[in-house]
Length: 528
Ligand SMILES: [Zn+2]
Ligand SMILES: [Zn+2]
Image 1: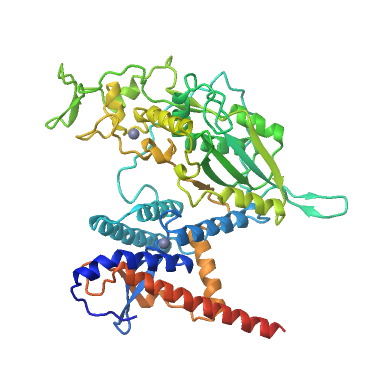
Image 2: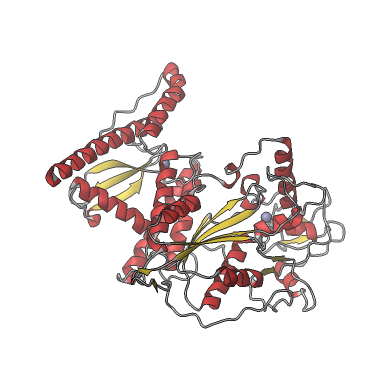
């Protein structure tokens, strides 16, 4: 790859560019190439030569990059398939941990630098944010405690009294085993069934076939909003209970998506099996209590809002000058006789089916669990009728003033300073994702995978695929120590405009495809 010298474009050239870009985009899409390749500069440390390298954006939404989203989805499907029916305990990376951790931190630092650079130049950084979150998770999994960046602090400890309106659950000590039981049929065949479960939220009122309430006036939007906000925590609680109940370290691969009525539900592939009766017992005993201050009384509204005191770095009542209780003070004020702000539970209805390794059912379920992964929550169901539009609006309204987290600006509405309060917070204008229409209250991760599912991270699964490709093509392995990588920014002399990047990736795709076809032909020729 070489770089043409930069020159100023004529007005006509500039005007024709967006159109040309669309054409190239279509072409890239057709060839399964990334639509937003990121340019990196690779320096050969032995020769000092530099070369531009285009890496796929890796976005998971088809609306942003169809090719990357499709690849991400099939990677998830591979991850789901590999872990579901494991018949041996996965080995978790025996590599030298310090080197491992160090390289993760370095990668994390690079990703942050590139993300910040993109942000500064006004580009979409959603992909980077996901990458950074992914890396943070890997860093924590690698045994480094805490976060690279401050901001997400520890959860406050609160003793949880068991609820008396939920049946108690027998608890066993959890065995470190993660593999399900094997059964032997009379004819001596061994099989290892696993389970596919779908859990939903409870009813908020009867809904029609189009997902809209039969009686909008009595539909419980508040509960729907709160259940969506705390759905991820409820799911965690369920898995914890299931492990304690079955007595082994059950592993899962789960995907959260909205139902037609816009409430989240979760499809869970678990390793091993549980009977329907047992499952019903665990679901009935599972709840998540939200010990947050009460939001019963609206204290500040409209133009009457708390004011920020610069000197004291605190919010005051605009009329009396009284300092509002801080988040910690508000939590301390919750007494033993108080009720939690919300109790989230699953609905009684659930779906469960046993699935055998490698069966048609297994493929069908994997297709099911990964089906909506390339779509944002809001894109899963489009509002087509007036009733559907109104239903979505009413849910969004219910979420508008509902606190999404301890740091939510909405706490000011109820006379409480949000945790880590800072200036310019306004109730109803919290930036938390959960309030945004497209998230329907659920701002958590769409795919939830337990640590010992396949014993591999997504990066490992990606590397598997790359190794397969390089070995099929007979390419030599590159020595990672030989190169240094850095991001290329728009001001750099070797920066390529988007249209040129796209042309390069299309050319690459065509070359790979030809090489791959050729390799396959040769392999078949040898076999014949
Ligand atoms: Zn892409
Ligand atoms: Zn919020």
